[in-house]
Image: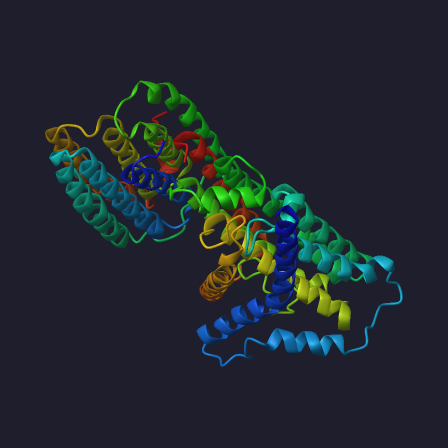
Length: 319
Length: 220
């Protein structure tokens, strides 16, 4: 029985890994498509990111003469980090072998590792845009990370564990309770998601205007398969962040421990949630304007404030 | 122990009240400030209504209705009219910059929670955990009065301070007698009228609603 369970757990871990890596560009495509609809454009279709990836993989890579090995390995490291992060999060089922290996703090660490490498690679090449983008990215992330940690701590306090599967168990599979603290944390998390995924109020993913770009400035020198991997990693990151959001704030529907029959249903529910979340993100990006980079600290300060308030309210109300 | 849903909902409303207090603290525009004040009133009315429902006290229904009419409709309407007449839609000037104000706000919330902890132990009733939040709302409104330079936003802060006190009253003591509440409601209404008249006087004298001008009133 034990071996049998282990085998199934491994199988579903594999299924989740494949699902995530294949579905991540679809999510990006969906967000872009929703945005196009909202802006009265016809859009390129939800499959456009796959076409872009295929095109990029077929091209020859151009690398600057003064690029070191760091520049070349970064896309692989970033992609690997994001894939690993997506494997840790309980996306379709709670009881996965990978998620035992790392808790939420390690998860934040994995994101930080990817960010550090991409910033170093951007500086490595020596162009002014690269270092500008890297500095801005570090500014944004150094403000977003504490807010993200506070959000995760609030959820950990409620469920008495920093393991994401335990958090999901505590929140989803017990009696329904309204958590005001989690409402605050959710608001803070949305802000962090926008900032960390280079979405509109902080960064604009679809522009190469030098004054505003953050993420695009860092990857300006990448081409072909390297660029494809980085784009793919960005999609994975968005997918991972949305999955964390779902796991923390809307965990109903994730398959329970040892409850493998619920898996097809869990996948359907997950897709529905992601579609909703993607449409919401597109709406949010359409109705807000990009803010000046100097307003970003204030914006992320709000996220930190909300997360701290959530934590305080948890202490006071016990909920 | 499973807490009843009504209490959970009141807790949520209390948390949102605190959020609105912070939003007001960070707001730069007078118009949005007044809208937030109306939202605060709406939350207050809803929470009073729920307390009334869960404790089965009929006079609280009246005070909820009173809050709804007075603080969600009448006062914001009056204030809107006032700023239209005074033509003061420019950005609110704060004395300390907003991120610092926010940090001070967090410190105040922690202080209020600590202060309320012993009171919470003594208090009875279903909503005793909310005193800390009410106190935090009051302190945040005070902070807003201190950090704003324009008279209109100070008055909005004063009114939201009253909201915090009202929330403390309903959550801690399950409402004051109706006579007292009517009296307070009338007081607030009259105060707003008087403030309105003051605004015009201040503007006529100084050509501005910036209260720093009033420091020059000393006769020397």
